Length: 230
Ligand SMILES: Nc1ncnc2c1ncn2[C@@H]1O[C@H](COP(=O)(O)OP(=O)(O)OP(=O)(O)O)[C@@H](O)[C@H]1O
Ligand SMILES: [Mg+2]
Image 1 (cartoon, rainbow, N blue to C red):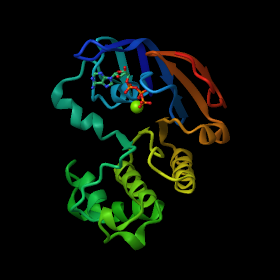
Image 2: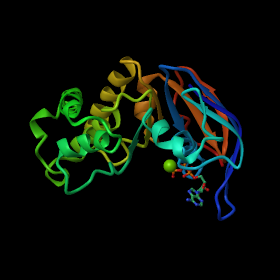
Image 3: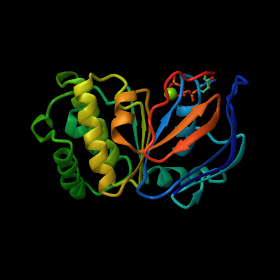
């Protein structure tokens, strides 16, 4: 599903963000990435959705070698993934419905197939009654639910989430976690970076601790690690 073999990555400015990372995630898992700021969590996630490519090492995602992938194959590969960010990244001049539909339009889904898929996604995130609102007319939690609907409307195999609760109050954060848990139980693999200790401790999922560009701990039903040292 996701395989990192000895991944190293150095940003163009010379920062070595990942150092010899090996990572295996099986189909259907729910994985938390934790670690102090700058430890390399987002860099690992960016590798998965091929925003960055390794300086050395190989990555396989959804049975494809994405290190050695032609540019022309990237859009098709990306369709197998959904990505959710801390700041939602919704298009401000499109409604909730249009934001979700757009994810299908750009991948060439036939227009007659778009409506039922968007309606199903809206139902899953419980936003059918807000479909015609614009992002600025709904709450932060609702904006994040919209972005999750957009991420899953194409039935991705893997959902990548980079601090999806980072901008939300505790109640909205729990709504988002319930939703992600439901999506995971429907079969989607989820890998999520977070600083939210309560969520990690309560959810009892696999927890991978990243420190200084390396995976330093990996536990089933793990906990958030307090007092991380550099
Ligand atoms: N675009 C970039 N160019 C150069 N260096 C970068 C870039 N993005 C991140 N870095 C550096 O790479 C290292 C890892 O950053 P990364 O964003 O992966 O950390 P993180 O664990 O996601 O941190 P946070 O918890 O703050 O989101 C850090 O030293 C960071 O400063
Ligand atoms: Mg980050």
